[in-house]
Image (cartoon, rainbow, N blue to C red; front, side, top):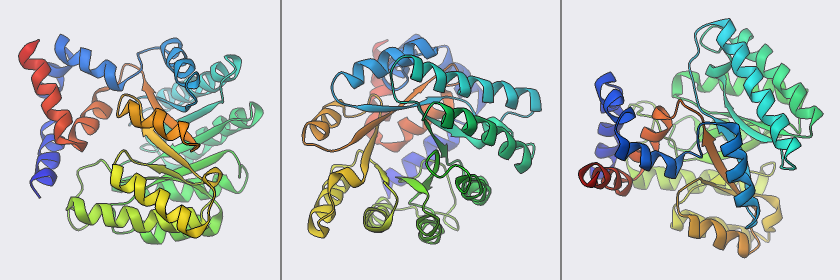
Length: 308
């Protein structure tokens, strides 16, 4: 319960503009940011991807940003994502990216986001790439799933989405996506949601994650189990072993800069491991969510501020 309260406090406090400005301009914080964010440019992200590939790790790139409010911004964002896919292909890397629909105009209209994502998927298909439609706060969940399933019918091998285990609605959403054959990345959930919408206790969230993981491993379309929790990693391995499901039928996804030793160890054991690599100048919301996920992260930042 204490960990849940700390997480929620960090997320809410970070919404204050004065805190954002302080962290954005603090050299000690910027050094910590580079632990979790590959850099500001696509060239830095590709360099990190090559390093990870050299030790057997696949990558998905996320050009950070969210909540654009004009059509011109949405189009520019779409073009940068197209450029990212092409840059990965040109570098001999798997074209694989993660995209938030609010970057493509979802706050303007669902039709705007749908049209921009369809255009992006045409490029992804042309380079044999893949786009994961990332999940945002619960206000966007239904629209995100609706758009994903609609696009999946035209681009079945090119698009998937994310399910956040802590949402009360997620078991229903998982069953819908399994029925539609949509690729799912399963995460715990990283937004400050009320108890009416999401589970609050860490133990309850872990239990929900484990239940959804089992459904996806057994019935899903090459699901991605995205967690750094050693207990949930072991639970995934154990369930697949008991059910006789080969590791080639799913992948683990882990975050850049978090538990690097575990990433390499899992790959060396024969598991598919993909690293979520964020980059770009709009790093603040992503960084705060990473800090809020684990008290150890928050303490690490505090130590850097004190010593910096």
